[in-house]
Length: 340
Image 1: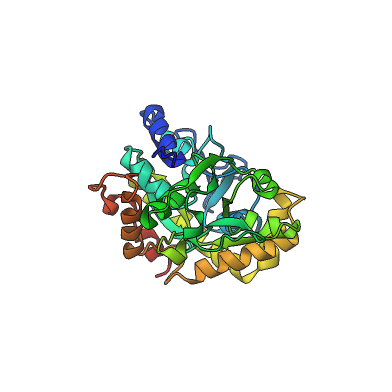
Image 2 (image 1 turned 90 degrees about the horizontal axis):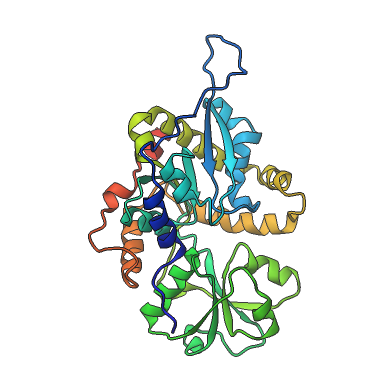
C-alpha cells in the first residue's frame, strides 16, 4: 500500500506554523459603524471560516444564525468565509484572519495542535457522526472490508477521509492499492476502481440520485467511529475576549436547535447560497445531521471518552504524538455556560 502518513490536516497544520503571525487575533475586527450611537449594544463584526466553498445543510445553523437574526440577537454581526486548500480554516484562524472556524472533525483539530497551531475547540456539532464511508459498485462482489484486500481504492490525499480510511485499514490489517482521485467519482463509475471514499452526506446521496447504484462499507462497523464538525477559536481571542466567545457559542447553540426545528428554513438558507442546491439532497442530508446531533447529551458537548478514542485511533497511524494533551485542545466551558 502506498502509505504517505501525512494528511491534509497535517499538511495544513505545518503550513500554519510557518504562517502564524505575531498577532493571533484579528486587529481589524470592529463594531458596526452603520449602527446609530445609542444605549443599545452594537453588534461585533466577526468572521468564521467554513471548511469548503460549497453550500451544504451541514452549515445551515450558521446560515440561519445570519438569516434568522440569531447572531444579531446575541450581539454578533457574522460573516461566513469559504474555505479552500489555500485558505483553510486552521491556517486562517491561526493567523488571526478569522475569529472562528469550522473543521470536519476532531482529527484536524488534534493534528493542528500537534503542530503548535494556537487553536482550541469550543463546540462539537455531532456525536458518532461517521460521515466517512467506502462506496463500492452494487454489482460487485465487495461487501465486507476483507473483500478490499489488495484492491484499488480511491482516496483523497490531504483530506480527513484519508486519515479515517488509513486508521481503518491499519486496525483491520487490510492492504490496498491507494489511488488519489479527490472528489472525482468517474473512475469508480467506469469500473477502474474497486471502491472509493465518500461522505454519506454527499456522494453517498448524490450518486444514487444520479442512478449510480452503490453499496457502502462503513468504518464504524469495524470500530472506527468519528465525530462531527468542530467549532474552533484562536487561543488569544479565548483569553482576551471570552465574553465574545461565549456570545458566539450561545448564538450557534441556539442556531443548531433552530435548524433542527425548522428544516425547510435550513434548506432554504442553503439554497440561498446555491440556487442549484437540491431540495431532495437537503432533506437526505438533514436526516443524517439530525441523528448525529441528537446523539449528543447536549448540543456542542465534547464527550471526553470520544476524544480519547479519536486520539487512540490517530495513534494507530502515527498522526499525532502520544503525549498530545487533549485537555489543552478543547473546552466544554462555553457549551456548559450556554445551556445553564
